[in-house]
Image 1 (cartoon, rainbow, N blue to C red):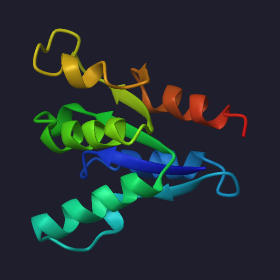
Image 2 (cartoon, rainbow, N blue to C red):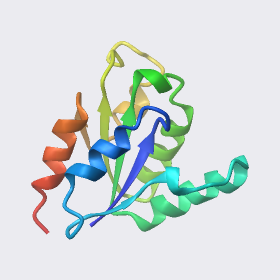
Image 3 (cartoon, helix red, strand yellow):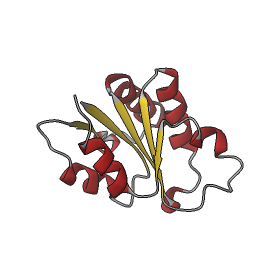
Length: 124
């Protein structure tokens, strides 16, 4: 199963996910591997990863509170009928602008650990 990690790029949450998931069962597509700092190039790389993946694990975190890129990626993934798992660890329940994106997810969690547990229990 191929999982694309989308969300903030500074806190290192991706490292938690990568260290916990079985590398035999899951291939991780991590946008931090893209070394380009040219917006149209790294955006196209992100979209390429979404096209290739089975699951998008999207982390809306306080440190990345604009959520603009995350919102675009969730919308693109949803249009491609990908499974979208959303984690948000701060109060987005009352954020009226994020409700459309939030309800585009297939599954929602309040912690990365709970999302990883869910993924680990997938039966392929």
